[in-house]
Image 1 (cartoon, helix red, strand yellow):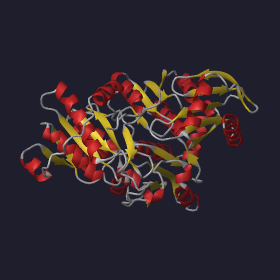
Image 2 (cartoon, rainbow, N blue to C red; image 1 turned 90 degrees about the vertical axis):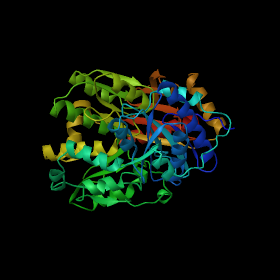
Image 3 (cartoon, rainbow, N blue to C red; image 1 turned 45 degrees about the vertical axis):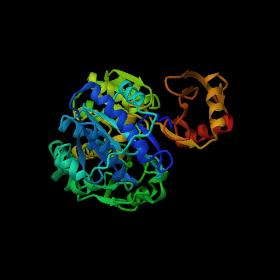
Image 4 (cartoon, one colour; image 1 turned 30 degrees about the horizontal axis):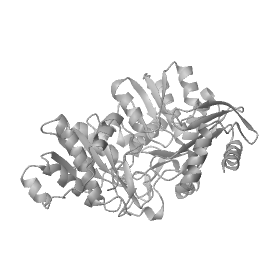
Amino acid sequence: MLKIKFGTDGWRAIIAQEYTTDNVARVSMGLAKWLLQRNAAPTVVIGHDCRFGGELFAVTAAKVLASRGIKVLMARGFVSTPMVSLGCTTYKADQGVVITASHNPPSYNGYKLKGAHGGPTNPNEVAEVEALIPDAAVTIPEVSLEALEQEGRLQFVDLEADYISYLQKQFDFEKLNNAPYKLAYDAMFGAGQRVVRKILPSARLLHAEYNPSFNGTAPEPLHKNLLELSETIARSPELKVGLATDGDADRIALYDEDGNYVDAHHIILLLIHYLYKYKKLTGKVVIAFSVTDRVKKMCEAYGLEVEVTPIGFKYISEKMVTEDVLVGGEESGGIAVKGHIPERDGVYDGLLLYNFMIETGKTLKELCREVYDVVGTFVYERNDLTLEDKKKVQIIENAQNGVYTAFGKYAVTRVETIDGIKYHLENGGWVMLRASGTEPLLRIYAEGNSREETLDILESVKQTIL
């Protein structure tokens, strides 16, 4: 049978091809074996997002786990990944399972593992679960959820209500809803739609309805997928900030009052700036390898330690559990902050920065200028190339073997290989090549001193490697 492998953020596959109830049952059996090796009476929280078949796959996981004597706490209807992670801490569960493929195209679904600490299960433990996934098919128990509930093996919990109650202790929603700066929110048809509708009735909502196909667009908060949000803000003077989250609402993107995209690099810098400079909090900053080096520059100015990890939020979360971390973030928009669970949370991060605006009376553009005063201006872009496996492998091998010493007029001065290949350029910018761990893509990351320069770098890279 198919060998199931977990990537940078869980197991993901195409629905009805590799992602089937039979294979979900196999993964759940591997998880059950692992849990029972560690605890005689473990508890698991299970939730699913808005993707096609989410309830079916969540029920499959619940039946397999419950059949092995594991207590299952299950959400009714769709929930976000941060709701499941928070649920692990709220109910003191041993593990969390989220049926989601996050930002992947609509044809995918996935299986994320969450630890008792309220964040991604650490890499070593994920590998242990993966090793226990049986090669043979697993029989899915023919038992109803009602029967499991009556027997005490299944309990329904309201993870969304728990999450809202938690947020209400963290934020003054009366102040946010009555603020002169109005917010627009693009749910991308994802799992953040209900919670934002409930906590921010003053917000203008886009794509906040149930649509398992995501209207045919991958629910990834990139500018090309958020043009309607950008245009809505640009033509609406009362809207001063735009927030977008991905399919399971753990990733974030922002727009300023002019409808300009504010990427994750800027968001990480804004959060460090806010928490350190305004909130007087300290701690280490942990970033994935693909994040801008401007973070190092800000941390040097503020006297904060920085650590760089391989790509995958599980590596960042692992640090947040064991060390004093102020902000942990990755280029793809997954960011966690001190004072919250060690988990990416697009809604929470968005509320924090919205609160920053209201407290200071400054727009997002003005706050970005404060960041530039510390680190200088920069522009980041990313291209995802869909290539045949043979070509993708050849490019990565070329990079690993030192074939690329310049990209057009941009000479390479230094190379790093923590995860992917990162080229530092003579102009002060950088380029990175990396094969995606969850999709059949070659990603090209680039940063320059202006938008024109960054786009020129990307084009030069494509001409060199293709």
